Amino acid sequence: MPAPSRPRKRPTIIVGSVDNSSSSSSSDDEEDEEEVEDTVDDEDEEKGKGRNGSLSGKGAGKKAPAIIISLKKVCKVCKEEGHQAGFQGANYIDCPRKPCFLCKMPGHTTMSCPHRVALEHGVVPALRKNKQTQLDYVFERQLMSQIPKIKPTFVIPDKLDRGVVKLHSRRVTSLEFHPTMNSVLLSGDKKGQIGIWDYSKPNEKTVYGSIHSCIVNNMKFDTRNDIMLYTSSSDGTISYTDLETGIGVLLMDINPNGWNVDTLLLYAFISTGPSTWRMLYGMDINLDKGLLLAADNFGYLYLILCYEREAGSSGTGPARAGLVLVRLLYGCCLKPWDPLFEAHIWDIRRLETQSFLASLAHGRVVNSAYFSPHTGSKILTTSQDNRIRVWDSVFGNLNLPSREIVHSHDFNRHLTPFKAEWDPKDPSESLAVIGRYISENYNGVALHPIDFIDTSTGHLVAELIDPDLTTISPVNKLHPRDDILATGSSRSVISQLQVLNLLPVKSVFIWRPGGLKVEDKEVERKKEIIFCNTGKKSAKEKFNESDDDDDGDDFPSKGKNKQQKKYGGKSDKAGSSKSKIVKI
DNA sequence: ATTTTATGTCGCC
DNA sequence: TGGCGACCCTAAAA
Image 1 (cartoon, rainbow, N blue to C red):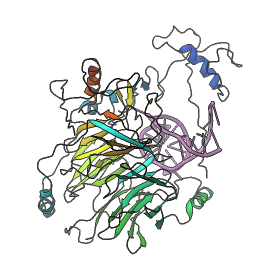
Image 2 (image 1 turned 90 degrees about the vertical axis):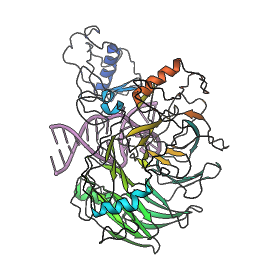
Image 3 (image 1 turned 45 degrees about the vertical axis):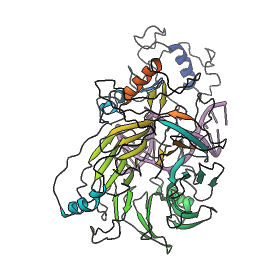
């Protein structure tokens, strides 16, 4: 069923009415380069539908006007003259009339955003009211003691081996490592398929194509029987699938009438408004209690008793698109009315939904929320307002986050939402990984790093880039035991740099320091280097510097390929930036 | 070979 | 309040 289509206009060119008489290209005071060519093109496009077989139809257009009108270049964002937004080489120039694309504050652009170059990288310590309660006491006693006082050094690779495999024909939307088999990675895609890849035995890869009909949003292993996988999808179903056979059980379907029926009803009787199709965006399980919870885009929370396979649902009100946090509070009877689990539901638009225990206010849509991996005492959220937030002490005051970290993950359409995730190996529960939306100029090429952020300080510990990985990487997963990161590509790679290593479309990437034992031809091995720095600005400067002087690096320059350089802790300004590099 | 279409979100009018 | 266009967006389908 096609959505109501609007005619998508071609990029409209505004003909400058100021100087339509003067056709010469030298009349303008600024930006007088490609005026002639622009003029011809735009005339072609303004008439018919621009079937521009010949983009450079010099003058021979059938409706060529007698007067060639010169154009004032206007900003494509605000349509004003005098500046232009867009890429200039690998640098994107923001429209100065818009708020900063990074921090969303007016008055400056991304290039000069203080959060872009600050060492603290946008950390805003929150105001904390120091009022001790009984809950705080419980927190201190039961959970705080588990958190090490001294934070370990993060293990961030500065050299990478990479395995690449193409499993999916659509973008990867979720990743999960197997809970016990160290080298097995699960991946879900936009199409609803599930991929299984054992990257130590590259031949062992499987794709199951009929588990869901669209985006696989969540995957959770049945830890009691870890060949079984729970998955939730935007098709509104939860499946319980045997990974050895691909045979699954449909545990729940919240669209029993199907997509077409709902949509037909929608257009027949309502003619506008949101679809009634329900999509599952959040899921978590607690197998000790045999519980599975899932959340849909209308803000409903569904509870499934996994073991008995009794599906039931409990509505929490028609709020929209909240996310769900679920975690058992072992031995803590904090919520007498609900001793089994604690669920937080929040919705930035409709906060009146009654039954949540706490509401974490965000400026815009919340993409994800995760309890910290060991104690569960902290919550890490990613919001569309370009901020990562850490909420300390789920027992305490959650009115304000304890950290706000400005980070570019505000996404447009066609991208899987970015989700900052804890490093499950970090005992101090402070390291998080998240892909970055905004691009950065790395030696002349615009790349989108995967950021490692110390949420306790807000420092950008590392930004991981790859010259061949020119895609945005919204989906990332750190291995629960090994120093391995898996990431899913958001789109195909179209790059002239790929001479040797043809990165396939919609791949799953594995970075691992120290060597990846793979022999399969489909799994490429490549040694790369990542940036480790605390400020992107200086990273670029250093990059350019090390092109000149520094060498002896074990990475030879090969022809036209962009080379990545390793950065030591060279401070570039007053000892300000101190890199944290740990080679492993 | 090009255009359309996806059901994403927000600001603006 | 809702329709509409724009977005550092992609790419399969038509």
